Image 1 (cartoon, rainbow, N blue to C red):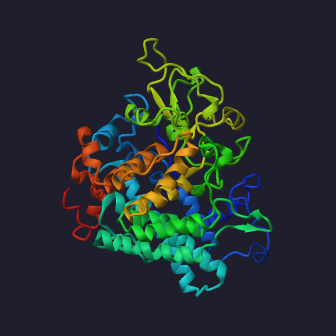
Image 2: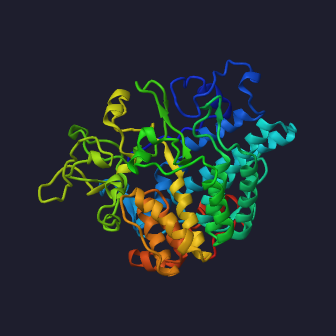
Length: 507
């Protein structure tokens, strides 16, 4: 398996580093840090907040193979990928549900999420200790509380009961607290996201231009909160928050589905929350994110198709899930031995054959994730042919809010008047015809199908199946059992916090 080094930027390094990003068109492209503090109009903990964004971008637990294993490999939509010998040890604990208590992937996933929590706590504690009550500082605190909630939402879905760390960590023992129940963790998430939604701006537009593209907004907090409610079947709260996001006029569905995943689609009107990444056109500035690199087509460099590490490849099951005429199929999946199809986001290139085709080729998989397929011209200009690290990781899209609203409205009994229309908004963008409401159960099935094909290989499918109580039926033939809904807490955590953090009872 290819090795990569995870670099942890110190908070004090994060802000000076941002000053060099003069050509970046994302939120890091801000006024030079040599300007006066008054000119920047920054909060008292803005350095810490930028450090949090930087940490998120660089953490393997959020942007690399550990995240893919937990969020994608466990679904029926994707598998480990790459060639058979590369990372073969990942197949059993993720594709085959033979969970391991002491595994680099999940140890890293836990540690990186807790690191994000501790960085957020430090920022919040500093603001409190300095009694920072100016508007900019309150916004900074709201950003930290959003990020903390985001970390805990991943943690509670993945591990179930986990410790809540809500104060600054001075020593490792401070991380050893007894686990809280799942409802208690969600209550903590609720409090953070309520604060974030109330105090983050609707947008960062100033003087007619977006001052910080990609920076957190109240819409992001409401969208994430809606999802947290959806997972508990709190339909009314979820629908209310979705309606607020939809009624804000800050977001819309892009006309082109594949356009969402192009460079020009980053931080678009459909974007609600993305992890930001940037590499300058000549490659001299690299503030990249390894997310796309982990999944690019893998082959020998001599073939011209060594575009990444080749992980997280779509399955036959996902390929067959798309209806005829659904443009999302060609925008989600690259097919070995076929054109990359410019009509669905390709660049006019033909992929080599799959190694086991009747005419064998150099590619070890039949399918590849097209949503991270980088522009060959930009690859060439940067010199990063197998490392398209400038691609943002999409976390929450407006389409997710629309489908959450459709689901919640259907469960509340307004599927015939509200839910079906929202579902059809998503289908129409995919060049599919309208569905007609017949029964609540049928619309529920239609929404489940639509979520699958809309968010293929985007890390939603496994957790959707679990929350719908469909995982045993769908994934059982692949080895899933009910206890696999939660991963065991990493053994190193249990060892460090002996008799304080107790292993999940089913493990």
